[in-house]
Image (cartoon, rainbow, N blue to C red):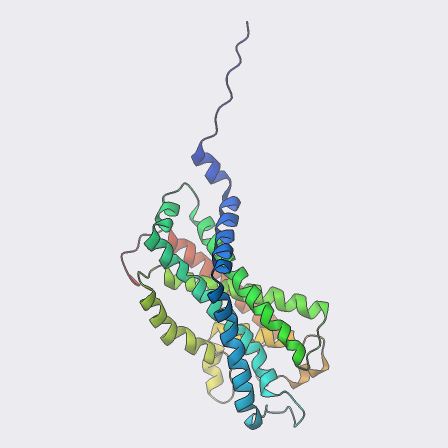
Length: 281
């Protein structure tokens, strides 16, 4: 009589470790569901940049003149358009990572950390969720470009979406790096005020890079994100010749943004594998 051995039951530990992409998808989906359930976040994250775009466009438009653009060149509202998109990506990506602090308070983060999953899947899931949220909101604002002298084409739209997602991923990774060591949202907001807001102001979003200030702006990674969005907004258009001088090339923008995203992702994975004792310690 032959004896058939019962099939070995798969261990929950082995199952979780062998399916890291399921963990990534679950965490990313959780971020999206949480965001769309909080309608005030949706309205606030999109409404504030749109108001700034209209107000600054109306207030600074009459006194703005882009060097070399001529009298019929780029208006300030048009110039500020890629910068506002960069602002949406920055603020949405950064504020999304506040959920790390909230998850730590609620105990969810601790339960994920003790689960038999790879730390990189935890990091990647949080980053993808935040990046998709930032991308969705940026694309809602991008549709307002129809009110400007922009020429939409499939290549231009695909380029903007791809580069905006890469930028959102890099900025979300930056927010993750800051939020992981934070115990309070107050400390997070303080860091954002003294570090992230100047980072946006010195990115060429608000004013063109001129004089000695442009050398400071060149060491700012967000300068290349804003410049990339500016290039892609005019991709295939004759108005690309009206772009500001001293603007980094599109190839340089892709390379710098990609390297920035990879380095931050590696730093996030390494930090998530270590223990922390308090704010920025």
